[in-house]
Each structure stands twice: as C-alpha cells, then as structure tokens.
Image: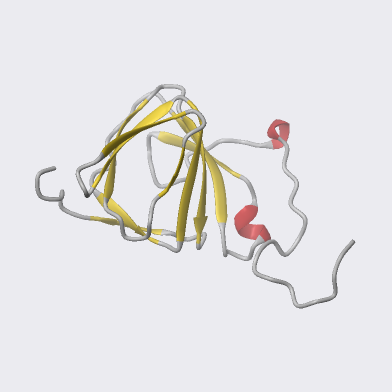
Length: 138
C-alpha cells in the first residue's frame, strides 16, 4: 500500500541489495578498511549513506578528528574497535555494540581486530572529516 501524502525525507525508490551481489572496495575515507556501498546514498538523493566497513591487513590510528554531519551511527557486526574520545573516555565496541557520535565530537580510532566489520549510517551522505590536534591530556 502506498499513500498519496507528501513524502518525508528518506528513500526515493525501493532499495534491495543482497550480500551475494555486493562488493567491497577501497572506496571510503580510511585506507585500512574496505567498504561496501549499500546504495542508500543514491536511493535518498544524498541525504544518507549506509556502508559496511571491514578491516584489512593493517590498522592505523585515524588521528584525532571530528565529523561535520547531522548523524554518525555505527553498529558493530563482528570483531571490535577501540575509540578514544575528547572527554578522556576510551571505549571498546564489540559485536552487537552501537555508537552514535554527536556532530563535532573529537575522537580517534586506536585499534581494531582483524575481523572487525561494522555498518555505518551517516547524514548527509557526504560527511566531512576534520583533523584536529589531540585534546589536552590525550
């Protein structure tokens, strides 16, 4: 059933993607991850992006940074990742963990397991990353 009212922000068309048809590549912001584009960016006209990211052979720290965005949500599918935050907190996110990092919150990815894999949803699709100096005491 469809409704005739004004559409809300979201997908503009039906999106279906199966794992058997998906591919991973070096298409994201980190050289040490491979990314699988889910097609959400195209389906929402750039309002959102959802991608699966997974570890490759070498992990590097990302350096302290923040994102210019409205939303950054991550669900860990497999393995673990360690993050440090500007308030001095360090967190290990394991399979089943979720995080929503507020816009502008300074953080640093420190390490991940070789089998790390996560789903990341961001808005807008073209999220900017800004490198910054480490917070005091980091």
